Image 1 (tube, helix red, strand yellow):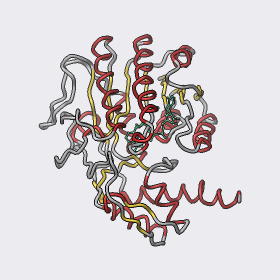
Image 2 (cartoon, protein in one colour; image 1 turned 90 degrees about the horizontal axis):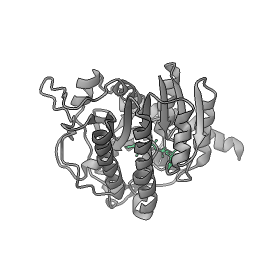
Image 3 (cartoon, helix red, strand yellow; image 1 turned 45 degrees about the vertical axis):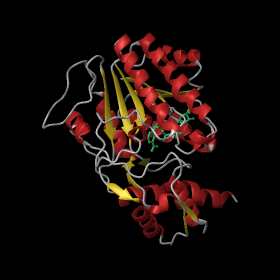
Image 4 (cartoon, helix red, strand yellow; image 1 turned 180 degrees about the vertical axis):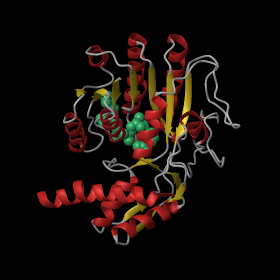
Length: 342
Ligand SMILES: NC(=O)c1ccc[n+]([C@@H]2O[C@H](COP(=O)([O-])OP(=O)(O)OC[C@H]3O[C@@H](n4cnc5c(N)ncnc54)[C@H](O)[C@@H]3O)[C@@H](O)[C@H]2O)c1
């Protein structure tokens, strides 16, 4: 199949494109290589994809409709996987406009593209942050998600509802994937894992927000990619819910559209997470305990039932193994490479 994947210079888009290429598909990667974090890392990801047969990259912004259309014109994509976005909860307080531009305006451009080219399936990345301050033991796709506590989540939720209206109006089969804290090799420098490892190695204190009481349903990148690849084949059809073994489908009654959680399946406390990093690095962290940050949520735990009912798959990577792989990558590509160039 032929895929258009946005965000391929980013963490998740890079891994998704690489897997699709390894599976023998062709991929046009679309990314504006924005300076939100080190563009050298983004360019390395694109350079690595460029070495694989079947890949071509378009470096442009989502907001540029002509560039998007151009990327789809060379060869019509069967499937569009839309991962490009302005990500990050904390940054959305400082620079909300960049979120409106990429996640609302850019989202509209992707939807307009899909309206024009009518792909077999649009897969869009949303976030666990849409569940806000929910105190439910497990977040289920049908839960209320219109009370976000970060502006980032507000823009991702808006993307979900925009996609629903386009799915209804123009018959675009759409799956919204709600990702839960994704980590792994080539991970984002603005996320806590990267910052913790860097600071511990440099003997600097790490900022532990929420006094260390946060809990997250961490998702290892290869598990996330496996789930996405399987969901590509689960094309939603209006009014055809999968109700097996008491699992509630989130399928819309009026559009070929559903939301699906993708999560690691085991919620881990922040202090346990730090302990594991210390053990793997063989080094203690200096902790700088801080109150909760505005926009942050205390806990995220996904119900994996719908993903399992649809795809037969449940993420399985043990957190320690996943952390070991991230740290091996960090030591090899960031830490040691940085020291060698000094
Ligand atoms: N990483 C996570 O834990 C996580 C959790 C929940 C949801 N998500 C979502 O998954 C998707 C991928 O996240 P990621 O972690 O790979 O982030 P990332 O920042 O590494 O990748 C996003 C990519 O989008 C590109 N981009 C941003 N704005 C753009 C624009 N206006 N036009 C063109 N390109 C633009 C960036 O250059 C970047 O390469 C995002 O939609 C994010 O909201 C990620």
